[in-house]
Image 1 (cartoon, rainbow, N blue to C red):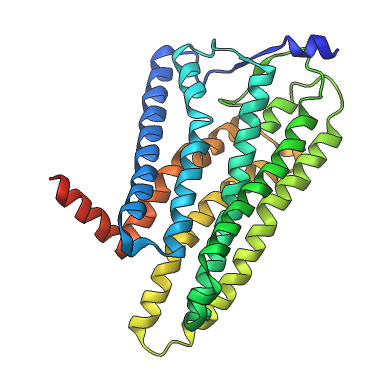
Image 2: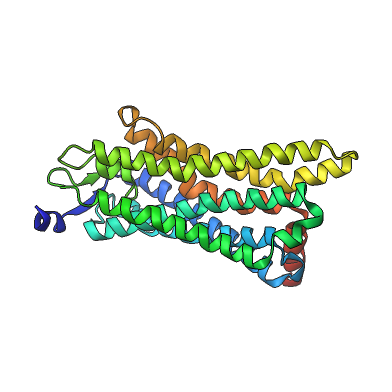
Length: 308
């Protein structure tokens, strides 16, 4: 069985049997990928080039942008190739496992880093006089590395567990990348243990950081309401509104796919929702932060002014 499994190649089901529709989707995916990659790269460059942005908040934002770039790049090239070939571009079992590993690794690190960013805002608003002392550069680096380590520790065992399954029948994945629920549906054995493991790890990756984010924002909102001036409350909330928007998009869509009961999992709906957090959210992140953050917006305008 192990030798048989190693020889398996997977194919991805096209979005449509019509070539023209596939080409429209290809153009949309390519445009979204290029916009998200360019936008996140611009944030990284802006933070790196402007000394005024060398603060913990922008340090975490730049790292989030880097994660988004790699996260999308783990999926987009193969998805675009399959759109062009009408689903005839194969991927081997080891290749599918590699894509799945990096998707879970980077996605998990992304979720943990969003919780770290909430903690940074909590310290900045609730303990402003001690902010620079608490959020030292050493702690910022440790929290960033910790996000990556947690993502790695969660992704490796789960990927190994799923790819020990026997795949001996259909090899067409009803998706545009090697997503875990879609791949598990192809296994010719009982997958209840694997579904439980996926649910537990998804719960850890999603619900624990979300709980920490929620607790942080309870204290943040309480601290903002104690600010006497309306301008002070507006400025304090503006530093958090971008982060809240990104959290709602990221956690809402991923929770829908990975925390829904397996009996109610719909391949069609799962594929559509996946488009949101693999292509659309990485576009919205730089747009949301650049539009809502005055310092980043000013840095971007200065850079564009120099170019023009």
